[in-house]
Amino acid sequence: MDLNKHQKLNDLGVVVWQKRHKGEDREISDQIYVIDNKYIFIFPATAKGIPLFDTEQFMMSLSLSLGKLPAVKFEDKTNIENFNHFILLGDHSHDFLSDIEPNKITICKTVDKICDSKENKIEFLSDMRSIIL
Image (cartoon, rainbow, N blue to C red; front, side, top):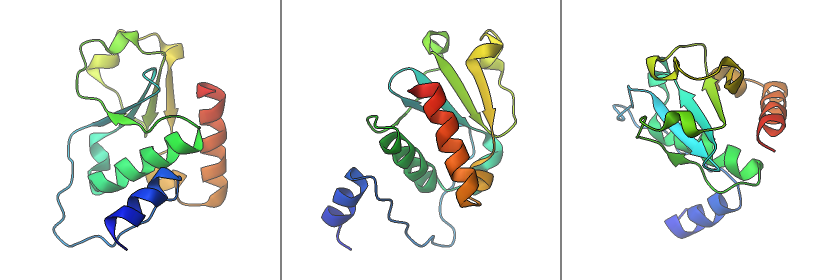
């Protein structure tokens, strides 16, 4: 499939999975994304088994399913307290979240568990809709 068709499908919210190549670079630090400039999604460093491409596709699919603009990668942790809600994808803690009110933090299943079954996907999307919409 050429890149143009691939991008058009992504814009429509259709995720096209590509075969992973052996030795593919993997992100080993926390992967942090923002949806709607209000909601932070944090993938733990322990999710290093998930290629960066898959994480980006997961976030793009989620943001489009919620009717939001595509999620963007977040690098600057200095103004983290200005966000409405923090979604941790997996059970982990972060020093930079220590000053955040606990009611602003939601701990969810890992991406592997979310994508494990249709029921888990529906439950996760429903939870995200109740937080974001």
